[in-house]
Image (cartoon, rainbow, N blue to C red; front, top):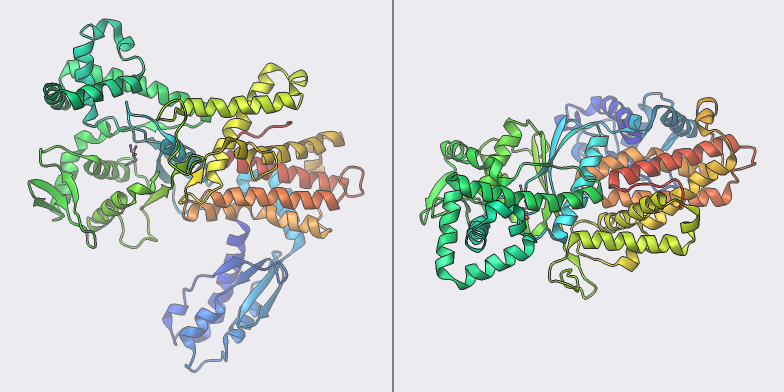
Length: 588
Ligand code: ARG
């Protein structure tokens, strides 16, 4: 567990003992959870903030505690002995300030260097989670919103995986919409020989979609046929099914190019997958009395929301919501996921809120939000262009994600060439670095923002070596690697024989920051905010800089310990990069 989990454990024991004498005054104090926060560094490392809350429950009643401060004193007095805490003091109205023992911090670092950073993983109360992310719509554009979902979802999945949670990385592609009727009918009419020429008939799917849509809007007879085509497709007619499959295949290959560049793995179970489950799932909800008729449609009314959730359309067809309900049932009961995480733009918040409420009413999810299984909508804001409007490229109204990624890479390559790396590195090394920098820059520029806010997509900014960017951080990491190389020491050997001491104030500060990595992952996962991890990583690079400018490493008396501190820093940085989906480089 994390350091904070260890500290909490001690405090829980202390609180238990300290509150024994007042348990009968207010039974709710018995299982009070420790409130542990990072402290103002002038006073300590952690702070326990329970005393005031407890006081408010027992004040005015006869007890041995006279004020919150006396409760704080008891918490300190009853702390079990441990190697963890150096000192505990009470401030003002009962705040307990805790100073970690420096040798404990050092030991934790030593141990991590030998056992690997996996040994620091926070303990989560679940075994399997499902992250529904990326999820573009087939034949429609995969736009920057889907890029955000891909980047954020992948990072969250990586953090859960770090915590030893099995993650089902689900691509809920839109492969079952009414657009398929139009596409298939267009294919049949314009390319009667489509079965021979195959996918060449479709060519560029986005252009194909555009042409089909034009005809759909202009030609009522075509529109009529397109609508019938949906029915025939969904009825399982062979020719329609074959055409549908080949359209999906083309889309899939395009999406895969993006995933491959970004090194993101996903398992596709598209909307069509859940279609056969919908009738039975709606039946279950109906048995619970959730479904009503309204205007010929079937709906679920949600308290506090003006419009009901439509689950069967007036024409008898299913929709986005019915599919999500069936998927939810499948994920909980067949896949047995304990945490369902949905990563989409905030525009869909209402949709998720409504059906989450519906399935809680049905008893599929517990009413208490602290209990598992849980469902969470992870919403995000828009990507904006320099003009502050929705992001578009010059060439077309849609942004081709591949082009975007390629541009980031080629700009990075140019930067490397300007730095004279062309002569020093092999073509593969250059290529590898340009990709790490370019794709890393795009990911970090997205993840470093609070996901709920809109952000402006700006190549110059995200590729700046001096700002809060992936490029800056990758350089910082490579510099640490180079310090270790320049020492000429065998670091693997040092890990086995050497130990870390944190005598200098900047050494201790860096050590403390490093051991707090695990609880940062915990915090980032609590409400799914990857920017918390980005901020930690950026601060780490600053704390390291302070250490490095005040503590000589190579040739100093403390060389072994300080090299190990460098090694620990680069290990934690690498793990941060990994959790953000960024590839670290040994040299830059
Ligand atoms: N295909 C949807 C879109 O592009 C996102 C799907 C999200 N996942 C879900 N289970 N509803 O907006």
